[in-house]
Length: 174
Image (tube, rainbow, N blue to C red; front, side, top):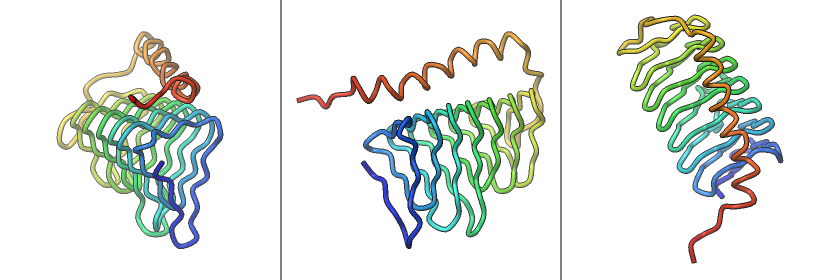
């Protein structure tokens, strides 16, 4: 597994979390609770700090980093879709960041907001709570309704359950 200290900066990973063996976690990264980190994900706290809260899914090939002396904060029950990039940003609880999206420096994605696939959240952009945004640069598309929240609350439980399921059932092909 690729978990590394760097210049005295040591990752802190909850025993409830699951980190796939091909993921890389470097430096001041703090993973709390049942966080699932997928294959190829790279989480670098080499000169900044990355904090990921309970119930979050960091899917395959996600890249998370922070500027020197700054923080990237990922809230509870967040879904970070395959191959998205999060850099010195704040993602609040229950947000969804779509596949191949980018959330750049000092941006904020509020609670239950959704960043559509391939969208760009520009530097210092704020995505309002319960809003779906998309495009390059991202613009509001529609509101998040209760049906969507129910659907995604169920999806998010899949990744939380993966923490234990992967620990028990993932085997190398021999």
